[in-house]
Length: 615
Image (cartoon, one colour):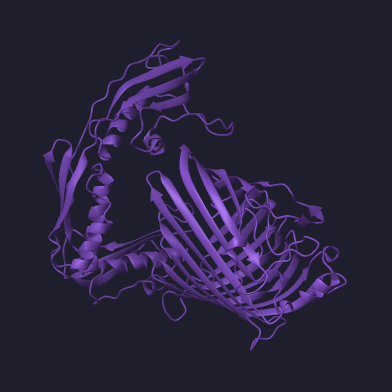
């Protein structure tokens, strides 16, 4: 049971002059502008999101927003409640101005935030049944911290963490109480008090909501069996596994009767099935790929058992083609899956063209919610081509390309070992956590084919919130070991430049150059990226960034003094179509003599338009 201190405030509203009294007149008034003044301590975009009164969009196809006097009066109360729940019980609306002209209304709300109610200290009691190390971890990770405003959400989050720790120790019916005592004006002592109850074991499992997906498919994904000691983490892991199947719109795994304690804890799995046949269409535009179109069909329960079949086609100025995939989600045990794919792709990069057709088989093991390991066998016929006129015949031969026309056909067979770890709190726009990726790839030797090399590639990304700001950083390193340059497919050679690597250059413009000035790729790469992301207004945010990196010819050959760098700024718009990105970058260390398509590139500015964060 949770108990929280209630706080409240007062508001005053005054109506300004206008052509019409919107509180009395029958005319329907469009909301042209809503201005909030005095919002400093909290995020204005979050406050606007809870208000029912909204501005009309400047986009002509969006719905118009109209003024309702009763809703507006309720919004003034919502503002006070919003502040109180975040530790500002003295906040009040000191004035609201309503100005009407030409069938539209402009609104202004002046807010006085007042002094916050701060947390004096936080103590934890009743946790003797839990290992001291787990209690210390709770104290360090709890969002409720001394000196911070007494946020209701922080209290709730801390209580939820405490319940989870007790549940992981086997106490299915643990209760947590947040006791609050005023120790001085605007300062509160908070005691998180636990009543663990008794330990339990898993009892019967109830399944509800499934129609076409069998109970067997659901039960096999559960991380617990009846008779095993109760662990709340097993409920969370079961829910994660069921969500990962992609078969359900919603999944909830919970204790079935939390208010009736039993030694054998009954659990309930509630699901809502998704449409098993899913069609998707995507249209986009970016400065690199220009217009892109993608269509897909997916069956979420092909041949039963939660197996997934997918057909996908894509067209853009860079890549076009199609592929088919079949995924078996439960191979002998939960977490181990098999995916088989076949594909045909045409890739048209600025410095080479590649036609590939083939397939792959992958074994994937998901270890918990953060770790993933994948082993892939790749069998691919490929044909690559570079502009023979831009490179000397001797260099073409060295790279394994035909000296006459710059082409090469071959069979690439390789085994890839991938390891991933992701602790971030958001898939697209994380504020905290890290992402790690390591790939080891081997071709040749005991494998058939035209190429023979070994590759190591790694990426590390870290995100940290600094108040309203987000600091993001990325480091990448890769190297290819081979006896000769001809043993490495031209398509596997490293290049940098573009919207996701060095933004001061165009796509694949940074690499070792031929004597004629054309990029020819290399066998070692390193990039360093840093961003500071900040809110601007509403769904619009900004970023400043610095990029550095380079590509070197030989394996394990890194010279930090040779790093190319750029700096710039950009905008991000969280739109219904995804996160839209605009970046403007300037080269700090330009490349002399760089040529693409026999054109000298001496322009130091680059503009990139794309979708999603760069990293």
